[in-house]
Length: 160
Image 1 (cartoon, rainbow, N blue to C red):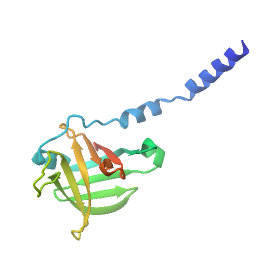
Image 2 (image 1 turned 180 degrees about the vertical axis):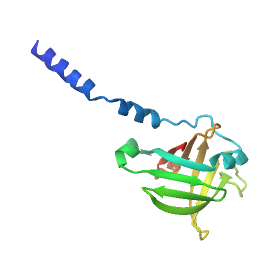
Image 3 (image 1 turned 90 degrees about the horizontal axis):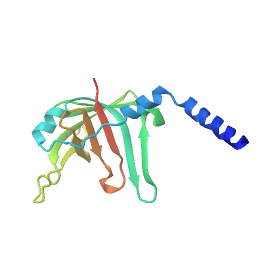
Image 4 (image 1 turned 60 degrees about the vertical axis):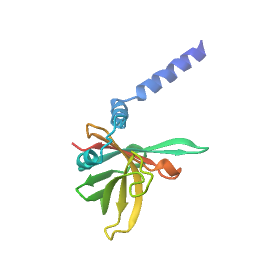
């Protein structure tokens, strides 16, 4: 009987430590790009604006999936896309880069229907490529960098 009392007290402690804030954070970190844009022109129009970072997901062999959020890293990240530049605010540190939206393989003879964002320094030096998944409503954005088992997939929600 004593074990049941301890289990009951433990359950009460766990339930008592749950807060409404935790539930809200879970809702904020869910931004789906399942129904994504396939047109370069549509993507160029929808990406313009300010995007708040929701989470970064890393998938590594032997480790599995790990996720970072603002809560777990105490970091804020905002991308602000204009016609040709992206302003990146990382904990209020500002960097600017040029970007362009292309199809994967564009310019070669093996063009895929996957959209990518190519990033360049302001000097024109190539920085990197992210696969682009942007939902058709223009409210969720994912930049996939895990295609080479190194980077993480950044998930953003449009800033209000």
